[in-house]
Length: 241
Ligand code: SF4
Image (cartoon, rainbow, N blue to C red; front, top):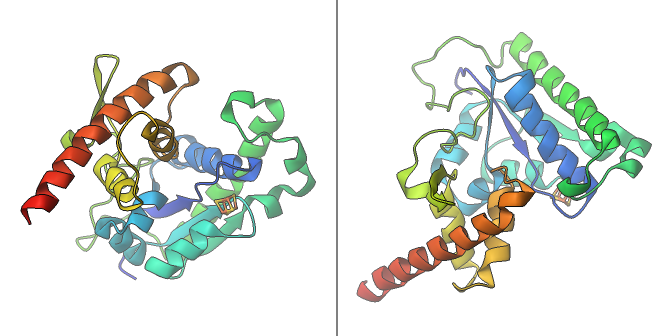
């Protein structure tokens, strides 16, 4: 494994059970608040969609997966497409009975969820520290580094201008990490453009891009329009080849 400056953290994308929600929120808390200088997240949907830079990053950096439950979707996906992970954390194992009071939807989060996220994010931070102290991940700049993103952000471009991944929402331009790849993944799955695509697109984008409840309908409209354009261009290219 090449010397690296960052520890990669991959959360499962579970939205169907509370443990998946805790996994995603705890990962984000670690990235943004607890260890922003030494971590970067890898986007599981892009990973599974075949994004080469994501897969190369996980091959070259020590990686921690955070899964909601024993199905270990993030760990299995990472190891299937990249390499062995350095640590695998499972929310249901960490929280045990405490998970019973947690909520699936972010709209219903309360003090109980907050404490659960706090506990899991502390465990993630401790695993990051273990890796850094073990020497498997150093904070020295490395020429062989695969140009990871700045601390606490997605390696596929979160926080940077992303012309191809930009979405116009309520008159302002918003960069969505890996948006073209998310569209491509949905198109390969046969998602047709039009209003019904909005729920699928919103669900896919919300995994790693925070969207407030108030803005969801605006994002949905913007995504439907952008996907329509993407699909039209994709179809045109296909018909020419
Ligand atoms: S690990 Fe569990 S919670 Fe996470 S995506 Fe898989 S089934 Fe859902």
